[in-house]
Amino acid sequence: MLTVEQIVAAQRANVETLFGLTHKAFEGVEKIVELNLTASKAALSEASGHTQTMLSVKDAQELLALQSGLLQPLSEKTAAYSRHLYDIATGASSEFTKSVEGQAAEAQKKFAALVDTASKNAPAGSESAVAVMKSAISAANNALESVQKAVKQATEVAEANFNAVAASATQVTKTATAKKR
Image (tube, rainbow, N blue to C red; front, side, top):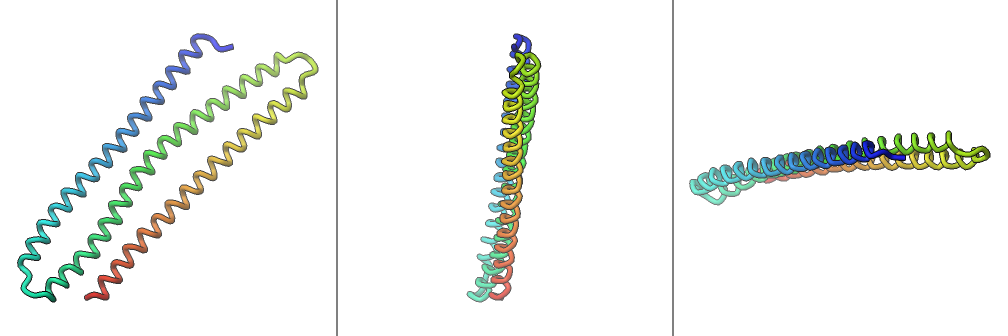
């Protein structure tokens, strides 16, 4: 049976976790806003510089060379921005995952302790029912661990794919720019 102190402690822990996760979410939003501001300032500055350069172009061939020279840095910057944004999102997601996994592990421990206490106080002759209950709990824990491993593997594959696509896009742009020159 749960005591009032245990219930209050559990609620306090839940509120602290909620505030911690909210704080992490705001940190992620702040990082995204900072990234967007930095990218916007850089884009505005570069646009100003490119406009000045374009105004000083003397012929169409020089204009084409200038435009093709702008394409590669733009794709590299876009890839870098996307990577940074992905890192921010992955970091925030990692914090949430750690918290959920920690709470799940704690809940599993408490439930196992509850079942253990109940099994010690179970009437004689109920050993098979207790064994079935413990077996079910063990199977559920194993299933949860398998799901967590699968999610981690899927995340790793997605990150590898993201990196491959970003590298490929940058390489294609470099090749295309080199051919135009």
